[in-house]
Image 1 (cartoon, rainbow, N blue to C red):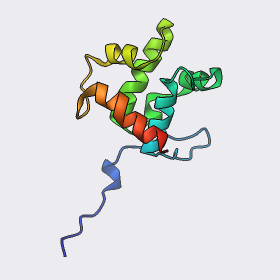
Image 2 (cartoon, rainbow, N blue to C red; image 1 turned 90 degrees about the vertical axis):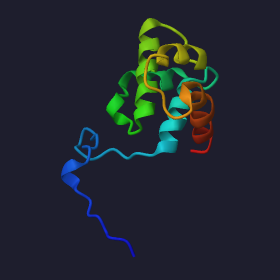
Image 3 (cartoon, one colour; image 1 turned 45 degrees about the horizontal axis):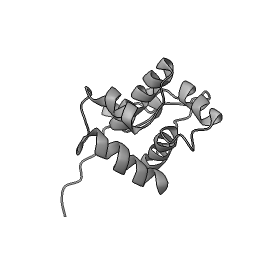
Image 4 (spheres, rainbow, N blue to C red; image 1 turned 135 degrees about the horizontal axis):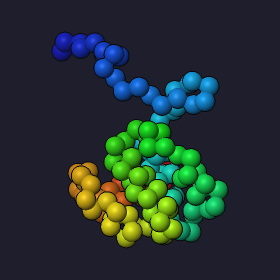
Length: 116
């Protein structure tokens, strides 16, 4: 059996906390579902768009999702529609995840988001 490497908590990223100081839960499929719904005009309700205003980048754990959220916030501030085409334009100068932004937005977020 291989050697066990102990986890060094001092080097781990601090988890975001809720107003009561409890660490927020995190789930890649839930992040994907949220972002996918925000970029789906038929699903993005006013209540969901209000979530966009209060959601902070550090509420998401996946760095690619943080980039997508930042782009969404920029589009919302500009009064632009949040959809794949406008997101791709915003994300074109940011380091892409494996496979590129188009694949990430249209396949990864869609697939993970639908199955959350």
